[in-house]
Length: 119
Length: 114
Image 1 (cartoon, rainbow over the protein chains, first blue to last red):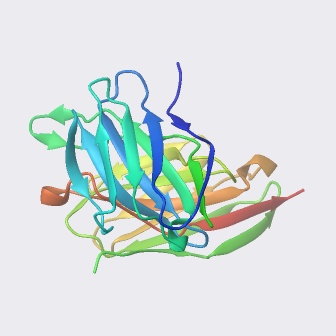
Image 2 (cartoon, helix red, strand yellow):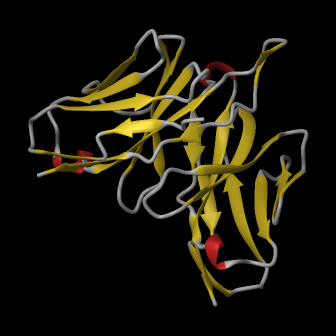
């Protein structure tokens, strides 16, 4: 079974440009999460998509946006790139367990990440 | 303020020895706590996941404990192997209206020497 795949592996952009990162979840997973891992910092939650809709958003400016397609793959777009956007961007997928109204234990499986460098 | 603090920041042990990593959190409302292992250059891999009603969970040589009252968790690694060298990240998941949002600790960098 294929895991979470992300593309590209590396991306080099200059300040002010736009970057588009892509993620394909594990087959059967409906949720996709995006995280930023800057050098020396922990993972920071960016966005969560489930069933094509944005369910939650982290404390990032609006120039970080994304979408989820009908096949559950997802894109993360970063507009007006700044130097501090340089980081490893990780995508994770999961299947939300909807039991008796309790959403719990949705293990997230991570991709290898896209390393974005802003020059 | 929701926070997840891990200690120590880094740890070096000899192969075959045991070690314990700590995680303290101030996240609310709490849903569950996970431990992930992240090898250099790779995405994190889930080791254990516990809800507030579970106070211990094992996965092979990894045993995680959770004290929801004191908001502390630990990850105990038994008989360490060279392949255990990695960053171990404590992650707390929120419930309620902030469902799906995870708070990550900065990780403990474990190095196992032969």
